[in-house]
Length: 495
Image (cartoon, rainbow, N blue to C red):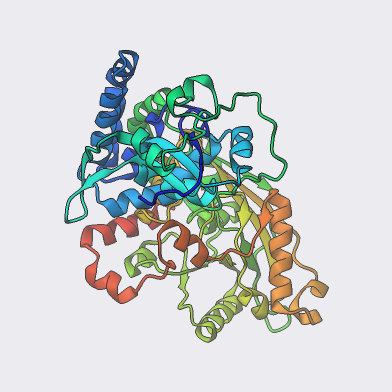
């Protein structure tokens, strides 16, 4: 560890920067998102009474080591880092005490140090990137040469307190910021900050733009118990909803949703079906926000007819089993333009110009390709609400996305039809494709109460998965196990 050359401002993470001193929910998140996640999740919950008793008896160190072992034993270090990058920051940020952080972030006379009882690997990226700390002092995991966590913590002489002392080069460290229950021992504190704090006007909260976890709520013991108890019923509910979707004609599905716990809210007036002709021109292009993989199918359900949708990076078998026609994009602008134009000559089409799903309350940058191909553009604001499970992922098995959506107690979809763009707002009036795309993005964002951004699909995947979201079809065909490919096809069918 790098040794500091001047006094540092240190504070605890749990119970100080984070309001809740209990790290149990974060280990539950790690357990759920790691390998054999549901079994680890259930095991952690069953152990919670024992963990609580250990802390009451003053054996918090033992409780910590048990949580580390159950959540991390046998998990690849790379997977732990992925969860720490894509899942935990959102829940950490929701629990940050902004007044404490305002005082802490205003310190500019030395290093900002965050001390945590959790393994450093779990919190370092969040603390450095979003709380702007210079150093994170925490426990170190034992990792095998093959990159697998043993579930054990390294035995380090002196522990966390000794690391803090070394960091300050023998000087006392201001580590007592926060509530009395979370303050460090007096013998290592130069000063102590006690509430109430004066909010720092210059301090700003670092926004968490992307999140890839499956769980909607922070899994404290009571919430985790609800999720676990609901899981069998959720699986049954998903199976029933899937079966209804397969055997009932699409035009009747909207009337069958409510009896089975779902709900579709439709606002605005959808246009009638288009029948392209020489005098009328091409079909209508429905430009949708992309909240889940189910957007085009829900739109077809609302319209009462099958409307083709453009797709990218799904297997051929998925396309064969899809309940609506699909048009595979190649990411080659010339080829994609020709395919979309050909489909519009046949009738209506659905496109999601963000290029990937986004669950946060903002819209990714719209590709301008759609604006070049037609002036019959109908913006459609799509959104969804769920209680337990998110229906999107960037690092997991995307074939499970619709299943997780249908496992929610009361999944809700909102479809808002806006008016067709007037001719003067399209490229036919001399507007540039980028201006048209940006205008459509703005009116859709205003409808949903979202924020427009310049983030792209690549930005999202770089932040969540460490890649640009591009998947080689050749690699998928050659390397993906048969069971995953069949599952992917079934997952798309369940849309």
